[in-house]
Image (cartoon, rainbow, N blue to C red; front, top):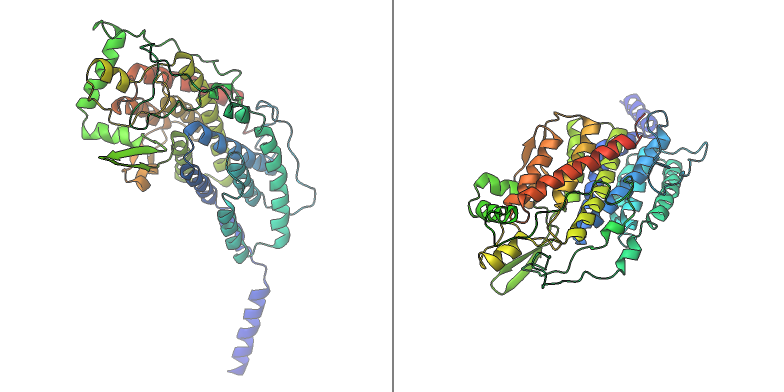
Length: 442
């Protein structure tokens, strides 16, 4: 019995002395990266940032993480330095340092994600929780230190680059002027009557596009509400009739793609806000779902987030150029003024001009980026909205999802259908341009 106990103790001691590598199974799990993106999504939602600002956070954070992966796999992935406007060659890892690149990619994403817009420390608790679990699973201190050092060098480079994209300059730019004398021009809508969102976003530096208007859409239909045979009048009536006769399926489509980051709910004299992921946040969620569905490895997962983030970022700039070039009135406003003062859209109207449609533009662009990574005819179930009480929807491809979005904004009553069709075409061109021009995977 004594010899058995002695043998057992010796075996336990030997096991305790063996180096633990369980941290790798945890840190190197690609799903952990997707969870980290979701965590940033939660922070964005909590701060009420509009979708284009959210896209800015996702893009820079994902680019930073991608640069770590490119450094780890130079035979498979190419740096974006020299490919994205203004991005210069990035720091290299110090020779001989025991960098864990998956950990460095996580730390880089967290640091850049919170620093681009948020106060520093917004994701500190989440970062501490990851490192705490990794340490419990045997993460050596020297590896953590080397990984953090490399992550910091990449992060600081990307943050410095991000500060030159005109974001800060547009914070103090001239405000949008509402002109109610022009019948076709956008004015604030109920119930918030909020001022125009980011009227100078077209001045943000693009990442890949040569200019904000490179794929400028045709002019919208000429405002004409008196001639019932005009294209303009027909699209107005089409929206009203569609909303007035929505089927349960059409309502589900509209709600699923609503993605209103801050909806003002009004019940009698009570007003309260409710939050959801923005359109860009929704597509970041889709990237994670796609990566998990495809059983993508860590590098492919990060690559997919970076490519999609870039597509979202530039698509918003292109769309916002069109919005504040044409400054067109929303369906709700024109119907209330000329047809039915009590009519309301199914969804709440966002606080920016109607033409072109932001969600349709960025959805089409994201779909092209995702298709280039995971292929067409990719079956997946989008469960993004479950946490907001909206059932999932399944698609046979990313492009199919983007086309459904074209109908969603129309069913919601917040866009004319021709606008959504034009926007989908514009977003597809943006996505194709980015996919063709960027050299990321060798």
